[in-house]
Length: 190
Image (cartoon, rainbow, N blue to C red; front, top):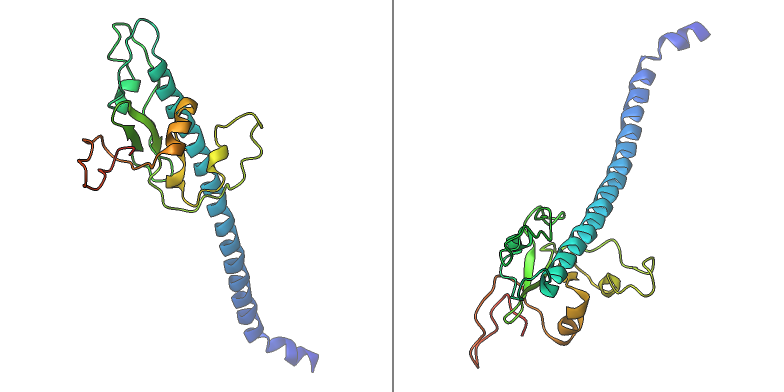
């Protein structure tokens, strides 16, 4: 009798195999979500690093030194080799792309000062909402805390933060100031 029951277990192996496939699918789905979150967090950290590097380079450009006269920054490529100087002054080793989109940064410009900062074009919700892990006296990223999109993270030198806080920021290529009664042109601080 017991011997007959063991012989008829063909269907049990099939059901066990199906259950194994279902469990593996669930585990792979959970691992995929975890992996996606890890990759997003790494891209966000890289965004903060690259943005800070460009911000610092713009700050050094604006401070000048080394016998160069101050002039507005019109192109981020000028940070690779300062055209104002006969010696090889470099503020950046290379032009970084936006790690979230793998595209160029959107420059933040002012008519008088030229490019004063950069921002991402990503419309995604940031994972990092709390920047309290940075030193209390550091204002580097504290203003990013309430932002709802990465494109709202503005990488601008500290001495220009007050300018940004007081003015409406629109981004894009450099443009002419709007005439009275016209809408502002993208790429200018109004």
